[in-house]
Amino acid sequence: MDDEEQNKSHLKTISIRAKLYDQLRAYCDQKGIKFVDFIEEALESAAHLDHITEILGDEESLKEKIADEQRTSIRYGFRRGILAALLAVDGRLALSQDMIPPAVTEKVPFKTVSGGQLKLFD
Image (cartoon, rainbow, N blue to C red; front, side, top):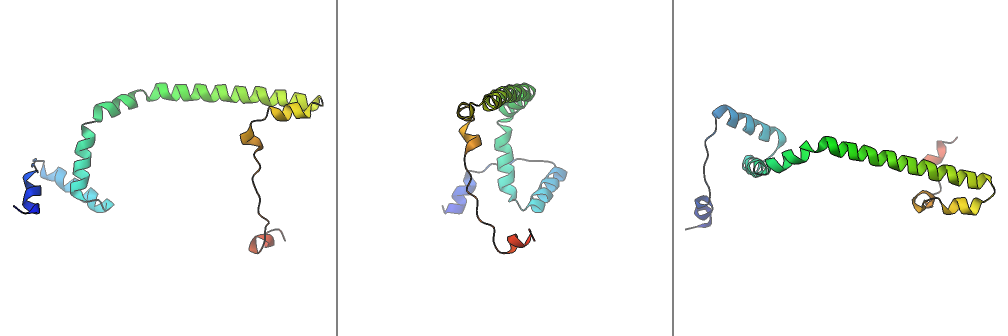
């Protein structure tokens, strides 16, 4: 038995409506996808549909949690910013700079503008 016959012996066939077959074939041709790969992936995904549906069912609660976290972060940042500004105004600049997170104060190296970019400022 050669390799091709061996591979075919591990395959099963299923029947689907001709119209559905034509639609799927046209979709794969349009997207440049191998038909067999598309079908196998779709069938494998179908086996996990319950899990996917469960995750999507929690979408609303996930959105609420994200919104709550965003509001909390904004409030926290605002409070820290106000306190840092008050300390700076009060002359305690070093203390206010200690309160600023490193991600905000990180120095980004700038390159000197030259060539065509410099002409933009003429």
